[in-house]
Image (cartoon, rainbow, N blue to C red; front, side, top):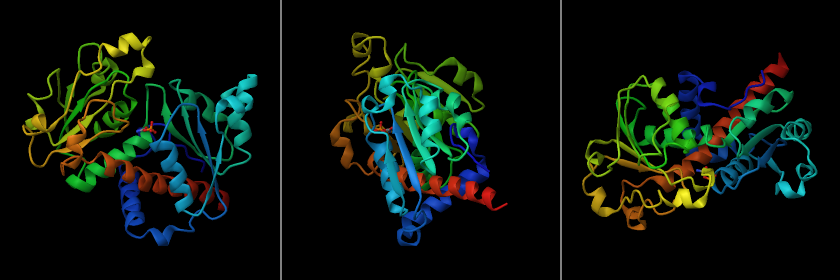
Length: 307
Ligand code: CP
């Protein structure tokens, strides 16, 4: 069966559990998986800048023994001549076995996925909407550190309006028994459509220091300046939060600090050496989870072709 990973809800709890266990096994026994994707090709279609997601998909496929086919800069592809993303995907479907795609316009992957006959599509970020493989990096780190995805108090801090990583992590955790604290300046609050879906208790505040002591997980985010109508508008919010050692002194020793990265100015580099700061480990964990995801989606595809 050709399966895609476009939204966190595309996998159920049992499948997330299996993905976590597979990723943990890959991290512990990398040599076992070194040829798991021999002869397979991942198409990497990034229509928006990326360091971690793009490179971790590349690293994931190479570490599984596969190859990566890059669209490269959209300006040197036929998109520059007016070809649609849909047609581009239709073509790439005939060249690659699996595809990771990022696009600046929300829901592009949802709109284009039905042209695919051969390759599973992985959403590597669509506009301000979703970033489900970032969620994989986040949940691996949470479970690795806390042992569970339930019974946690999670603070989301920063640009909750445009932060797609926040939206997808919220959607995942909302299926568990957690508590949320949304920490944002007015104007960058968590969108009401997410709040209306919340089955977990939540509060909305604008001050980080007054709530940090209650949190098990603090999820920091940058102001997503590329989503604002103008740079001037984005600059009004720049510097709303700064997590430094002084603020962290109000937190529990068991807090973990996550950030999807890139960081701009919301976490002081002095925090990097604090054992509670796990954002660089989180980026590494994202590679193992993407390896597990590639294997899982390819296995589903070839199981079907053997039927
Ligand atoms: N976290 C994340 O999506 O980073 P990149 O934009 O560098 O891929």
